[in-house]
Length: 438
Image 1 (cartoon, one colour):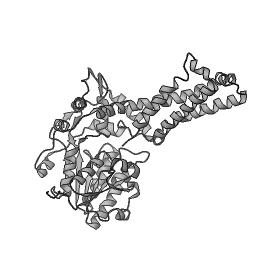
Image 2: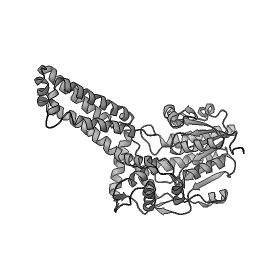
Image 3: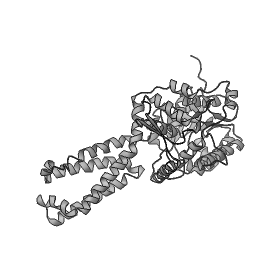
Image 4: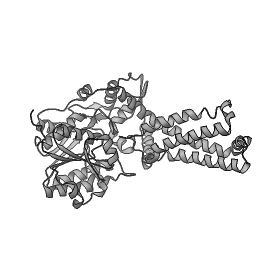
């Protein structure tokens, strides 16, 4: 059996369980490298990469070269796949994209370790977004650090799984009959995940000269064509009507997504993503083509190599429906509590008819109404959302059991107050797995 290209190479992958990081980690392993993944959450990392050695670490805590030394023991190369779309919550662009990477570069230069930086098309000092500007600052720090460095700037990455821009495309493609699209004429160049992983493997194997490379296909496509190709690949019927989304609507949606970002929701519709899409995703394929001796696969070739199965269509549809499911659930629980408080006398009468005292009935209605409101609001805080869904089910089940014991006649009520709890419980159970991000 021939020896694998990276046999004996020890590689540290930053952001190892991300969309790109997970694919890169598996590709490096398949070429014989010994890979260690640095991840923010080891428990999530173990789910995504069960056979990979993982170390926990947050780039915001690695802002000095000394911070990196313990992570760089027995490492030949570092591949940085970590990143964040915009500031908010647990994300700090300046620290994650610039300061931590500058410190990494200094540490690697001192130890003779090479670095592969996954940057982005459009990462320039004068770019229109903080995302691109901080990425450019990190790239610049690596160019002057003295360590062997490669800066790879992929276009729109198309892979078997989805995240970010790819997830947005699949979500939009899942809309039946009508195809809404903003910036339909925006030029886009794609790159397949396999080609991206191949470029990284080539750098570590010493087959690609040091430098910066745009990883893009030769041809540009209008965004409308990329979306149509995504729709075809998923097996969805062609849209009967294409509707251009006005710029003001796009900005309004992006502003709402930014607000939700403060609550922990990492929507692909946030303003940074929309600005990048408006600017276009294009690069120069010639330097990489010259260095590698071949062009990267075209968008159509990439899609032809990917397998589309039922789970991809289901994920696209669930991604589309999840915001609506969360909004409906939150509204249902909040309104349930508010109506309990505003209709206190009517709600009390049910318990009074069951033999409760007036004070006990009032306290019970007020308490559980406040619980309902709290559950509806807590669902909007992303870090709690999954657990809140399960708690909603538990509380709803308690309501059913308690009402069956205390007021069984409610099962025969023409308005069906108990029967209606069942679909609400089911929606919470459906939303719970939809909230899993990796």
